[in-house]
Length: 313
Image 1 (cartoon, rainbow, N blue to C red):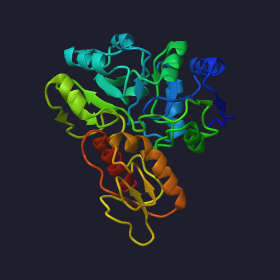
Image 2: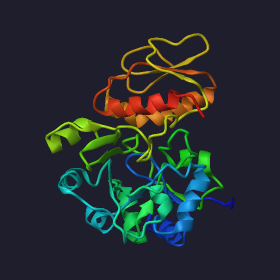
Image 3: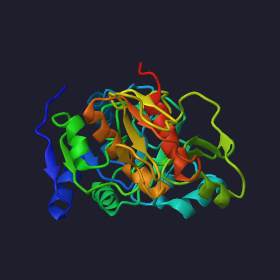
Image 4: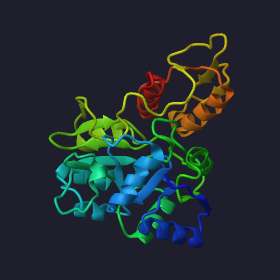
């Protein structure tokens, strides 16, 4: 693997111009989104996409999301049906990813789709990400900017902790306000939830006027591996209290080592989740996690916690 002196770029005109220059040259740049930091590479460049998998140590069967600067560009790459357009109109830019049929002439590197006939697309809401995408002028493939399977990064320092020396640069946009990855939905053959995330499922179902079908299994979108988002420490879920030798990650009014949201606010909890897991992981003890309500953003939090707690391969 090529070793880099990873540049820490500031969120100004100079930093944006340098980040865009690097992306157009085939280099990798970590960029902020409203969900987590993404590890960006030119989605039309086979070598750049291969570098993403190499830098992360990501399995090649795990597809990527391509990020676009505006919704109109999606029609260049994917087949949009009526439900997809309705969701795009309602939630883009934002924390929604759509998995749709890839157009034959899209020009997307085959590694992005992991050999599938579909591709995941999103328009991020973060203004710095959209400015960078506009300047780059190309679709940018961007999984979370961390070693594969580990805790997702919500600050530029988190990116550097995991990928310093493996990527060309990180564009510092401050902490990510949502804090968990995007919700992933496909509309074909029917609207189906592939991964809960930063957009509550209830909002999507209200927009469509019908419940989403459940995913039937297999990997056809990012973030579906059983063990994912994992710290080094073991995790125990649905814990009312810590056992001897454990740290307790709390929610709501309770005694604990670190609290996702003392007020029981799921939005605050989602924003704090990955940073809190990192802080407790540094202590080196197993982590017990208090119960989280399984609605709204709680569904995304619980999804990440279940995958973090799953046995590691």
